[in-house]
Length: 305
Length: 268
Image 1 (cartoon, rainbow over the protein chains, first blue to last red):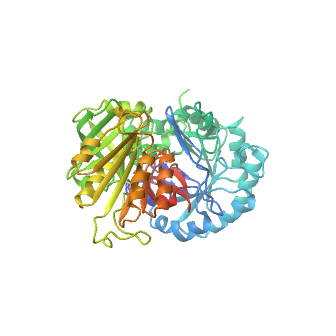
Image 2 (image 1 turned 90 degrees about the vertical axis):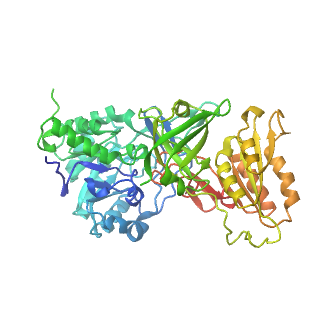
Image 3 (image 1 turned 45 degrees about the horizontal axis):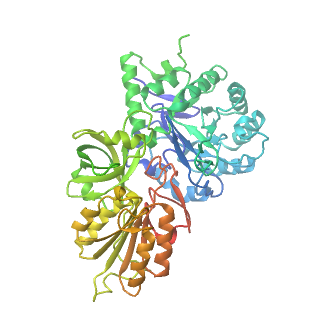
């Protein structure tokens, strides 16, 4: 059975990846799973400078989901290069670093510095976090602005030879247009979806349930929406898609592969069950065996219509 | 590995809304400190979706007990669990209460001529982790005074068990149906004032945030070392999601990893 997939220059042993913000910088989840058994790991998003994040409460549960307003709480690039990276260097699987910035120059600086580190094989460009203020666009999110996506990705393409992955938002009029813009600009792959913007209210206090007022929704409740985004993008572009959005078990993962994802990221599920990613990997193997499919590649985009 | 399956030994109703669930886990129990917590997945369904954190209420050789109040769907499901059911548990998580002397708090040894005193302050079911602590403190032959504040007498749990340990228990209720009528802070104030010249008095508190703030203020006033256990919504419980951040004097800290027990001087 062949589980190998390719994302840009990355050769993954299998299509299961830990999603950004749900596995820290590896070290935080290492007591629960053998990370080296997975396809790759995406770090928590880092920014050039330290960000303290949004005021609490930062999370609230919804039916079948999680609404968060963390606000890219992270210690910045310097801390990453001096502290966090040491654990990642020891990993045998590709390390993808997620980056975000409020100007193009900051994205470029991050990519440039990160490209110097040998253990970093790919950069996921977070253009779609709904919990921060996006500058340089008249839209709420960079990922909603086709021109901004194109501009940032093409600058980054000139900056790094690492695999470039554009992480997009589902909250757009037409995901195909944004996906095409990323492809045109030189992205090696796109990952989608990031969380859906949302909010909840406490009717007793009449206050928002999140300190940041609004947040991003993830978990099984967004899966159908995410699948539709992946399917739409698959029909519009030729670069690989990494499917994300409410993947809780192998069945969910296979659905994404069938809709056109070349790999998948496990996110919120890690919070409910830190062992979820490995269980999903085992489940994919079982599925392929049962269906007598020799290579996971033969599953990608094979939706029967 | 901190994720394990635990067999339920018992799950008993001890008050109209409170239950004590006991599960077997010989290896884990040994390593658990009062103040630490366990994160339990009550069902595999997607609602309730996340795990729920419960502090260790009683720690023995081979088992952990948690004391919980039925407040919503997750605790309702938990209350229906039977003996021999299997629970998916993460833990022990977070730090615990510390009995050791620190740089800025008087050493317990320093008060050689008198018995060190622990004042345990519980608001509502904040008594849950404090009972585990009371067992440890009374074991050390320290004087233990427990202050329990509750809405009505029906909401008081654990007072008998605490007395059995040898702790002195003071009770306040909002409606005066038992003990002092008023807030547990008033009760504590009187005792603390009387003890303000004693050495080796420490305060440990768990309860609603406004109560903890009052306790912290009081501790500062009488220069008593004080630790508080905080609660916050949590997703992962293991320091990854950064969801349970609370404001402290030194910036945001995580209840699950940096806490749930904090030095009272840190909280705002």
